[in-house]
Amino acid sequence: MQKTHLAYSVVGLVVLGAASFYLSENAQASAAEQFKIDTLSHLSPYIPAQCYTKPVSTNGQVNNSCFACHTDSKRPNFLNDSDVQLSYSFPGEAAKNPWLNMFKDRTTEVGRITDDEILAYVRESNYFTLEGKLALADHLEKNQSKYDSNNNGQWDGYVPDSYFNYDHQGFDKTPEGDYTGWRTYAYYPLPGGFMPTNGSTDDVSIRLAPAFRNNEQGQFDLTVYTVNLAIVEALIKEQDIQIEPVDEAHLGVDLDKNGELTTANLVRYEWAPRDGKFMSYVGQAKQQLAEKKVHLAAKLFPEGTEFLHSVRYLDLDENDDVAMSARMKELRYAKKQFWMNYYQLEELVEKEIKERYDFPDRTKLLRGSAEEGLTVAQGWTYQGFIEDKRGALRPQTFEEQASCVGCHSGMGVLMDSNVSFYRKLPTESFQKGWYHWQQKSFAGTPDRIRETDGQPEYSYYLMNNPTGDEFRANHEVKAKFFDQEGKPKPAAFARLQQDISYLLLPSKSRALELNKAYKVIVDEQSYIHGKAPIVKPLDDVMHKQVEVDQETGITQTLNAF
Image 1 (tube, helix red, strand yellow):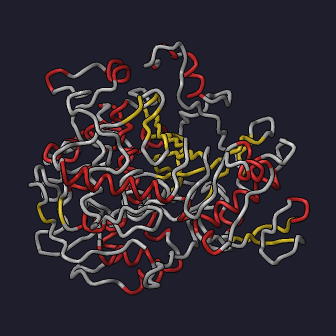
Image 2 (tube, rainbow, N blue to C red):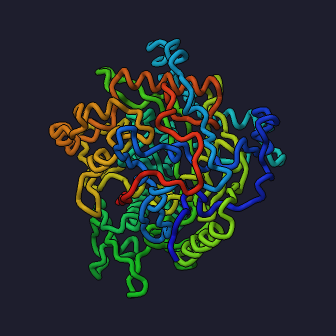
Image 3 (cartoon, one colour):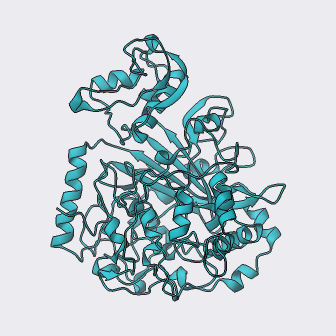
């Protein structure tokens, strides 16, 4: 059966009656009510603004930014959705573009904010208090009743517990020196909106469940945890992973698959159960694997895996180079709640195909709540925090979180609902790729090589989407890499192959303008109408209305891999 028209129906989201949580424009709830009763202002918040872009410019040039997300997938993500590049395969209710912020002119509001004002703002932390405490955790504790949507007298969502205090191996520690379990990693940002040149810096940390951090006696063991993280990396990337030398006899696992329990300096990827080839975790997780309390498979994370993702403004360092800000725009959290095997994941897609065929106009609503997060059928729960009007972080509403689960459950590029870990820098990188951008910047990082054709990834993206963003609004990037006739500048592309920061980081003036544009959205609290920091309206670039299955103008699909 052909797998088509799936990205916008979002595989894994639960189908509910369309009127269940919908409020018309004339019956909008207050901010508090929106959090409490999980309302939606429109029926398709899971379809991002980027998907309403016109790929064909007025001069007839085709700009394909779609392929970075919608592509032929890798098993066990059976959502092969490259066909979405060709048409707007929306349900009928989503034909009208709800992202109204994309059509607003922010020139006047942006002009009122000075450079000094915006720099002072982004350099103030909204995650830590002046005493170094976790401000958001404190806020949740003091305001439980405000966010207690299930009325059980407590906050049931994620409580921030990372100190963003990383050692030379990328492990996060408390002020007292204890390990929090979080470990940060460097990765290649997904081409498009996640590149800092388009408005935000970000970082990601991973944390495995306690059993993966403990030895067989149930005690925290840094070696055990480090090895288990390497095993997970080997499984997700399906490749060997270099590690510091470890005693296999002590761990009881032949990590390098040489047939002996000696000293290993790599985790050998060799997983093919039908051929009798298996891998194992170490420590307490090894015991739980044998007891089938946790599971292991290629391109799947074990149960209990968590991710923490901060999205930040663009700051300037002492050299006026763009750097990560102290202030967070958002803090995003994900946890894998349960396991689904390959068969179950494929069956999920097949059911979605039938659903899309039988009910083409049925939109998807979401399972969960603003308090506990939104859960997708692949087993993951997602939750987010965002700036309030004062700039302090607050829990996102039900609708605000919907944009997270839309992308994390319905795209061909996903690896077990995640993007960044598969794109983690290789082990030959600084600190084996386990580091935070504040420990080392993008500078000097070579372009990533595509698997299908060996081409440099960011260069390939630019050749097919010259502005480097989904809205064709990054004229700075286009001028940097292409001449006035639209021809590539060889010197610029040669530099990019050796140093991705040449593309990823914007100029000082652009960075400040993007910060100001987003600050206007914060002041309005208008996130549900679009969060992209757009200054000029995109009337010529975005559709305000499409016909269902209308052709995009792209005639040849591309592969993200």
